Image (cartoon, rainbow, N blue to C red; front, side, top):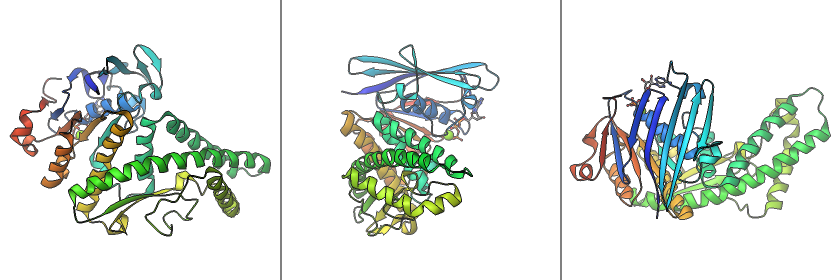
Length: 375
Ligand SMILES: Nc1ncnc2c1ncn2[C@@H]1O[C@H](COP(=O)(O)OP(=O)(O)OP(=O)(O)O)[C@@H](O)[C@H]1O
Ligand SMILES: [Mg+2]
């Protein structure tokens, strides 16, 4: 059993006046020159399955230049159901629609999650911790409505608390109330992250072994309440035990008390999930400092494969896998690793400027769509 994305319609969206794309159940390859509109289609697929786009566009950017309204629509089919997700674009607004009814981003999440792998992800191991937190959270919000609610609630609390900390005359009882909101939401979010990361990490370790059999990789969640500054956790590379919610909250309160003067001076919340680290290690060494380019790519590839596997564990079917322009960035062996994995029945959309990255055997079992020729 599975759910498949069937037909994508793009009207007055980005570079598309009116376009329809039929997806195969297996692999669909979108081939076309630079700026042909391949990533635009991938973005629409992501938007209509996850409720957000990796480019984080303002609604106006999604609307085709010069048009007043636009629409992207995706039909999904499977498990005896037919679902229609759409996003209506008009001026500076966008509105999600599910089966004809207005909804919000959460209304199009969960039916068929998507996993995107694009060139931006390739250096996620070395970039700032916020990139890795976002990778985990963007995945989590697709799988679990509670995770999604916690992410947005926590973000709001941090913003409000920061505003309060910047006020000249600070009301201590008001701050205490925000502290409690921070601690309650933050502790719950940390627990959700730890649980999800544990699943991702175990699949990723297995996938990495397939790519680099002589190395051991691990991923640990390092909450900043355990290590100020983030990343200074001892021992490194081990996710601390977060099972005891009361203990986590107590530690969080202690950190806030220690940092109270600093926070007041800087007008910033200095500890909590928005400062946490997700650390990759290879053979016990921090990948952020030590991993080679190739190792970093293998780590990211393993992470993406793990997202697919975790989705399958949780929902019982694979997500939609979107590989935007990454084939050219991977060498032969890593390309083979991902293609081998996909053959395990994952509906996949691959974009490329060059079909030369795919062998004839694969191409014979793949739907190839030329983009940018008749738009
Ligand atoms: N709102 C919009 N209105 C009109 N055109 C747009 C809009 N947004 C993006 N475009 C155009 O879409 C094109 C880019 O499309 P896209 O990023 O999908 O290309 P691509 O095929 O992925 O290219 P590459 O191979 O270089 O990654 C650009 O020419 C850009 O100007
Ligand atoms: Mg592109």
